[in-house]
Amino acid sequence: TIGATFRPKTTLSPKQEAYSASVSYTTDTISYKTDHLSSVFVPMELGFGLSYSKPNKFTVGVDYLYENWKDFIISGNSNSFIFETDVNHSVRLGLDFIPNAYDIRSALKRWNYRAGAYYTSSYMICNGERIKDYGITFGVGIPIGRMGAKLNGAVEIGQRGPTSNGMIKESYVGFNISARIHELWFIRYK
Figure 1: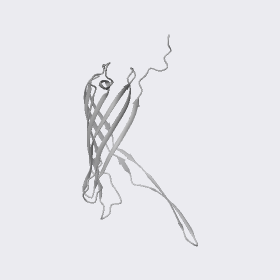
Figure 2: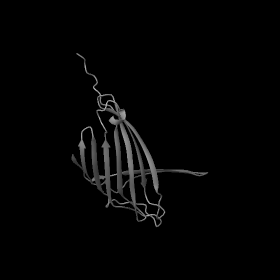
Figure 3: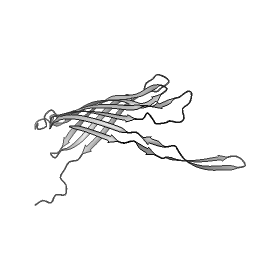
Figure 4: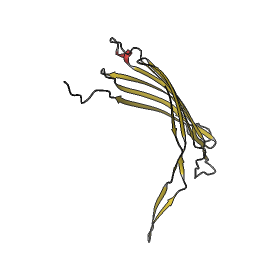
């Protein structure tokens, strides 16, 4: 299976509203300011995907995503902190494997076993350091009934950012539980 996605660059016109109040012993000052900010945008996004599968046995796939944030203007930079934007590249790999989808003796052989990895060279550059995000994922899909419903669970272990130039490296673990319901409902029996 081959797939592609495209999202054109979209320009936005944000509006800013600011309320402020100052209270002293003798006077109260309240001000209101509304302002249209300079145009910002959501960049063009281009994605490609490729997968190969053997039904009820395995699926392996790879996805690539490109976003061009180069022209995005950031305000608020100072001498101690400089934030820039660049092109975002992201690659994701995944594998789903079922030992034996039709085994009647062992339920564990009918489970989906999943593994994946990802790497993102982010569009964010802080103090000259590009923020990179990478990690691995593991999961299982447990069949429920005979119609294709599944209970899914996954764990993601990753790391984002460097420790150089005063940056903070983030290590994270994420958990995901979901259910896929695939049943025949509202059918009148004859």
